[in-house]
Image (cartoon, rainbow, N blue to C red; front, side, top):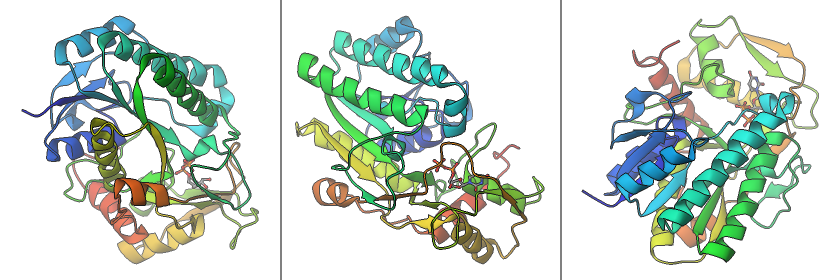
Length: 328
Ligand code: UDP
């Protein structure tokens, strides 16, 4: 059995793919999850430690039982719209939960921490390619809560020697190419799964949120990155920490932006079916364009986003959406 890594949110979409990537790389992932939005069935690559980040004792117990070499922290609330309506929830759960986890790591002597942050920490910066040197100016409580955790990590690095890698994700999409795992949120809010449900007739239509943005076709531009590319970067980040490299932040995106309409067009090409759409209003908190400069991750970690084409991401998500495990 390889060294253990505690994966918070290990029963969720990205966390479960991270567990698979860790297992493949020879580690034993321990999924720490309260199963509020995650699925016990997605915990396939190591044990489940059921617990809650708001319950410090449950974190202490998992760290004492499993003695991991590192923690990967995915568990969080992540809906921009919800964070605009109820910011307190995001500050309590995301920031409060991370504080409990970070303090528990320091007490238990865990020295390596990999954190899922987000491009939402940058806010709306008018078409700039966003990289690690871009100032972070979040425009919603989700992005604000993640930036606060980044600041917290820098403080605990200085005071307690907790080494960290921060990954700022762009739009994570797709599913395990082998069909073992995929995305299932309840309620679903993300573009690609909602679009595929509309294609499959599981919902009447996809609502396009805003057609009056200053972009090439009026819809928002996002940089989509395949979930398995993303989780491979986490394994590289973990090795970086275990090799005692410095604490560092990395952006993870494909470097190419696509409009909502371009995603819809790509889906037609993959599925050979039409996407019923409704033109809707803008969604509060949405930035016009978010595009990643991921040079640092490629050059320093040797990361290669090999699967992050729209065709592959939509194809793998479509394959997953046909599986019996995909419940809707
Ligand atoms: N979007 C949309 N209709 C939907 C869901 C999303 O038009 O039903 C748009 C959204 O405005 C954004 C892009 O699709 O421009 C990606 O949104 P998603 O919620 O998937 O990710 P986010 O960018 O919020 O992280």
